[in-house]
Amino acid sequence: MQAIAKAHDWLINALKNISCAIVFAIFVLIVLDVLLPLADIQPWEGTLGVVEYGLLWYTILAAPWLARIKGHVFIDAVNELLSPDARKITSKIAYLVVIIGSLMLAYYSLELAIESYVDEAIDERSIELELWWIYAPMPIGFFLVAIEFIKFLLGFDDMFGSRTDVKEGM
Image 1 (cartoon, one colour):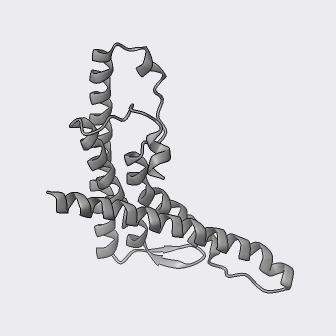
Image 2 (image 1 turned 180 degrees about the vertical axis):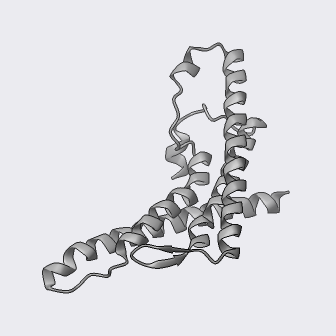
Image 3 (image 1 turned 60 degrees about the vertical axis):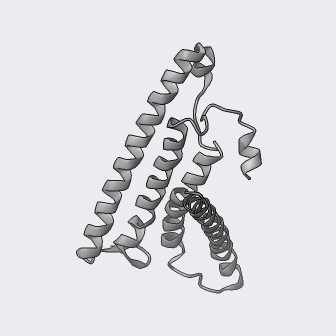
């Protein structure tokens, strides 16, 4: 079981690092796109398409890590007003909603990826890219988010716990 937990931790951190690299690549592409015309050099026409894909990919790939460190956006004002018993019940309901939603999104995005691969669908923007590449990170990201919330549901951690965990996770 420890080996699975280590592999899971490694995967989430690897996806976070890939996400960071994507953000840096987007930064470089945008800077080049702005600066190259100043030197009378034609910038790459595919920048816009790659940046759009990169924004989607880095969001999906970083989502499990953000769930783990409680860095995702949520409102806990109502939670603070509830009694401890009511807080526990509403937390469990919230976890179930997120788990079901994440698993549904993982399933349907996997279905889309497989269908676009089989159909050899192409996304034509400033560059041509096989459509399944766009959908590929979605099932992985959503499934791992579901696992993080399953850990909350089972009591290994609490989503409404100390927000200082965000700083420690970085």
